[in-house]
Amino acid sequence: MSKFKKKKGGDLPAISTASLPDIVFMLLFFFMVATVMRENTLMIENKLPAADQVEKLDKKDLIMYIYAGKPSRNYEAKFGTEARIQLNDKFASVEDIAAFIAAERASKREELVPFLTTALKVDSEANMGLVSDIKQELRKVNALKINYTTRKGDALAGLKN
Image 1 (cartoon, rainbow, N blue to C red):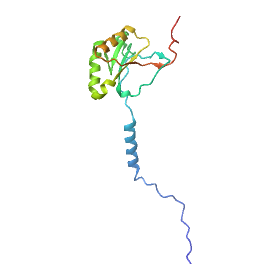
Image 2 (image 1 turned 90 degrees about the vertical axis):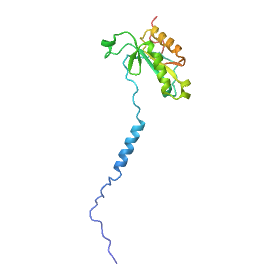
Image 3 (image 1 turned 30 degrees about the horizontal axis):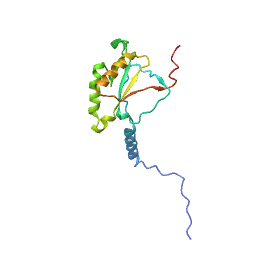
Image 4 (image 1 turned 30 degrees about the vertical axis):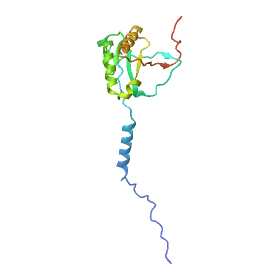
C-alpha cells in the first residue's frame, strides 16, 4: 500500500494576470460609451424661475437651448451687466437666433426636424423684453415649439405684495 503524502506548505498559487488587459480595455470601452460630455459652458448667470407644475422632456437630443441672463462674473468686464443671449458657447444677439435655428435643423435628420423643441433657459432676473424679442425671432423662423425650462418649487414664493 502506498502512503498518502501531505502537501508541503499551504502556499496559494500565483494569480494569473493574463486576462488583466482584457478587463482594462473592457472597462475603458464601457466608460467611453457611458460618459456624456457637457455640451455647453455656461457664460451667464442662470438661476431658473420656480414652477410647481413641471414635466420632463423625453428626448434631449431634439432640444435646442437658448440661454438668457446677465453675464457671469468672469465675463462682466467684457460684456457688461445687461442681460445677454448665449447660443452654444458664445454670446449672440437676437438677430443671430435665425442662423442658430437653421444650423440646428441642418444638423438633424430631416424626419426629426418637425419634432425639434426650442428650450429657453432664462434667468429669473432677466428682462421680459429680451424674452419677447427671442420669441418674435423664433416666430420668424417658424420655430413654434417652445419650452420654458424651470426648476421645481413654489412659483409664488418670490413674489412680494
